[in-house]
Image 1 (cartoon, rainbow, N blue to C red):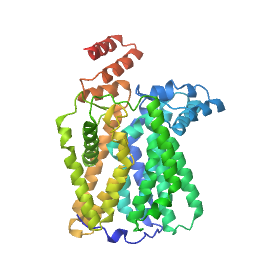
Image 2: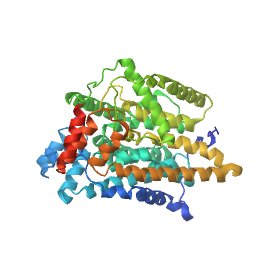
Image 3: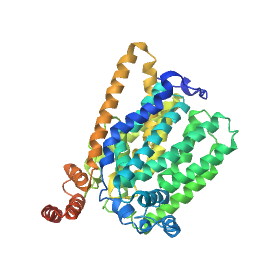
Image 4: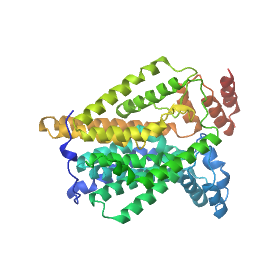
Length: 447
């Protein structure tokens, strides 16, 4: 792998791009919109869209009492009031028109794509590499669940504020920490991100990753200067755990031992890495098996390999790679289901922010090859073909979320021995008054 020490040695100088380069972030936004356009015709699905939107009592009316209810209650153990508030506003303005909800999900995702471009530039990438990175972030099929599932508005909403706070922090470092107003802006954006999704608690760790990349000495003072962010993360994290526990969402639905749970976490971690390069067998639900599959016990091998590589990169001062794997790890580690929250051991949506670290690693590797004219043309060709494949997969995966029928039929392609997809598809058929197929699925789930 090519070393990237030089690219992160000094702070990047932000200049106004000229020519076509000034349009690169907008090109990334437009291309992303094209591959997600077919999601706008999708409807609601009978997987949490009902409890979050269709049947949510706090969305029955739109007044101060309802808003108070939104901010003082959870939805099936999840405390994301700002996300629910956006649903309330949409329902008030557009009724239960799913297109309006899908349009806003896509707009928020496009805003994230734009922010990713600026962040990559702020971390030292040139305009072309930032464009590639923004496109990977935008059209990777592992994004589909976050964008096309209305309930996952929390991903794209928290993402806008999270990425906005991270970009502000980069700008703050560029100004040698002489812009107090940026500190206030970061705190506001961070708070809004936390109110959108608990996953935002990792922001101070991501800020430390940026510190390392910028060669700020890794001392206790770096942690102490971020005490407001760590304090907010701790408070919201404890609140989230309390609400999940009160809703019994943290109860282990399996008979797995603690060792089994560790294997599940390591397997998920390794699989997220693989799916970044080769996104295959994407399912809205990855259910637990009655017994942990034997191949899960091989997962420590992948984690050990990653740990060894990280150590080598650290020793060789290859900061771009250390930054990338640390950013990915910090942002995914609380989502590895070791505590058994949720119905599945894996979720495509969990990679929404973490993949930014892997994108940075890939771009750093590409930079070394693109600097060699002999290989630059071939490398660019491979990258564009890979991006096209990602976009096509995303376009196809959007169709899975068209309605409850398509959703659960897709799950059944991979998992035919569990009840959840049969029961939920039966509910969908029952709402359509297609009682024959509903009864068939109900009976299948009982056998």
